[in-house]
Length: 278
Image (tube, rainbow, N blue to C red; front, top):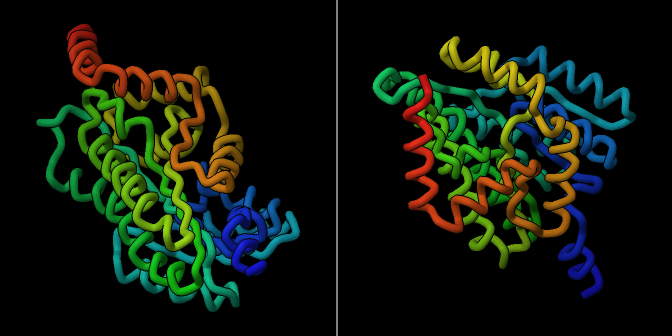
């Protein structure tokens, strides 16, 4: 009985055996390093193996264990292999998966190709689905586990000229909300992260029209209300408390409240405001 209670109320971010996707930079790297500070062991997966290895070097400098693996999260086969390899590398069942890998895509709806949509969906949505699909069975078998899915405030703000990105992030949020309820009885915690601007490489590495990438980079440099390290720390703390949502910035919270208070009025205001965008 005592072991059951300890397991039920344990903090999943402490001494975690974790897998972090997109761990080569940005929020993913910050998650990995924060877990290292919390005495965890981390498998750092990224499509860019060299970047993942850099994160592992930082983890080892912090005195923790890290392992780098190349993985395209849009490939079900590669994520399945990652799940199998992770347990062997860690020499312990995985207790936490952070589905962080993501790409940026912007532009008017009629300017986007179906290839753009497929690329964005494969990473942002299918990558998270794959991560949950291949790790949840192991969590159920253990009788515990934890999932952090990185979405975005774009999942509910529905900003124009971000249709594909908005759709994928809304899907991540919906999946997370569903799993939070469905897996609670299995002692599996779920948290979904919904930030606004956070300094990462998503704009540089994404498919963003130049007219917007310059503006977005300026905003990141001058108006980002937080850092990736602060976001990772807050999200892990929220997970430990059993909370579903992490909206780290004031603007994210304000937009969330506006949308929930009057969805129709919010949409009308957004449409009216967009008329003045050139």
